[in-house]
Image 1 (cartoon, helix red, strand yellow):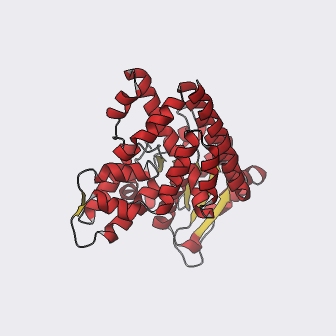
Image 2 (image 1 turned 120 degrees about the horizontal axis):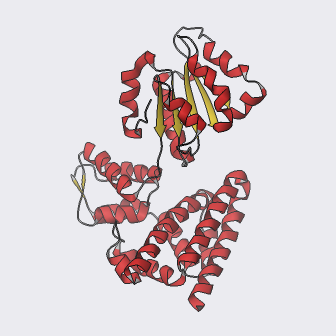
Length: 338
């Protein structure tokens, strides 16, 4: 079956009903893929009717999947089988599951990024009773549209510059943006328009400013100030700094490309979409002066590696962030020296 957009998934599951054999959810954002998978699981089956199989186990014992799809619930009804971290390596092992006679249990496959030539993707797209849900990286406009609709459903709208300030604080982190939108709904209860002051009061908490300040200090080349700020944060804020830094560097990369194309940093900041909040322009300008295109690429690579390392070694996350900060500050200082 052709791809189903994330926003259309709920209605597609409802339309397909018991005729659907399963769903493939794939994409590079692990958190968002997990969120979509969780939505499917909650829609289809009760917690006690879910069987979870890591894809790696199928290779050592391929019969596990067949047994799980044929098993029956003690209370009757359809069960759900979730196979996580699937890759093209397991495509041949999964292929027989797509042709089991009805009634078979519902199969959910969770995967990372899959290209057009992916064997797993082709297999699932070729099955008429299987949904394929690609989870694409959010753009700032997507996040703002999602938040605006969520707030509108609750009876709110953004006032002048409130949306800009909200995006400056939340970036393209979907989970953060939705959480902050929920906080705004509670904070602004009794009114219909959300002002910039409301956003600052509700979303601009000390932790957010602390993280922004630490990131700004790093990319301005001040490693000592950044390290002091980092150690003033609690563990949860320290863990949050990597995704916020990754989002910030992604925005910086776009601005760097625009600055090179338009012939200047000021032109890039003036025409930025979404606009750069006026209170952040000076920080972005200084960082763009310190980092040329090659430096931004090196910074992005370093941040991506730190994110990967922190997932593999979560107990060492604070040390990984600290070393990353010193490395990025050194890169910025080299750029400022010219």
